[in-house]
Image: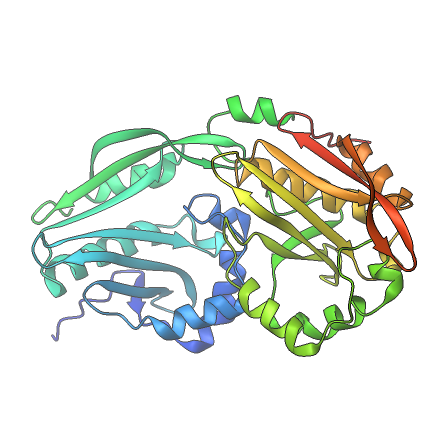
Length: 177
Length: 193
């Protein structure tokens, strides 16, 4: 069977298309989605379209939509940012925009696929991420797939009237579960 | 909850800082241009605003081109109703200083059908919450002209205080107007009437 590096058991990672702009605009302006992220400001459709059309995936900035395997429904997005050839390291960002898919294992599945892409397609040695310390559901998922906590940046992000601690996590090649 | 109480808070995020009771802040779009052009060429709308001259379509277009990329130095929004998503005005911060954690606030309800009914008050509260809770400002300042009683009443209701009166600082429509400088510090925003 041909390898399917961008497919998991429930979801696949695919390129972002111009036709995704509408759903992306909805997610990126939905507080229930962006409260978990570093994103702080409302985003314009214009900015979103320029960004989406101007950033085709490459080694230094790989960007994907997460869609369900069965219905091909876009449920979120995922990126591997700032990869460097010297360190073979990148920073992962993920968000599920469709709240119906927050449970059901879609996040774990997409995380595993992303790590396989990182190690098997991009030949990275390390993937790291940051997460708010109160986002316990996400931390559980990251730990489940093999990420380890590396430290906490205290009061690193001011958002929604409060200081947030930022947990740093990483996974090295060979550690994916 | 006061801003001070929020500052001490930890854990999961509260409700959306982009939304008030009646209005929502959204990023501006090029499609907003016709309404802006209509409003800001209407003397009834501009009577108490800083502009002096008619404004062209291309000036509005280039303003919007800059405005689509929202951020700390470019926190400028369309005001839309939560109920219908209808754009009724605009608002934002200028002269944002990270050292002073200070910014100047500007707001205009361009659609006259929404001049009463609490939309301005709700928009002010939402924008000030955004300034304190997202931008982490310490102080927000604005100018209001003598005679603009409706606006001044709203500003005072949400917690702004008159700090200075600049005598005959503006010349509008054939007469000099005194300009009041109002300020609001973090912890002073009143979210309830």
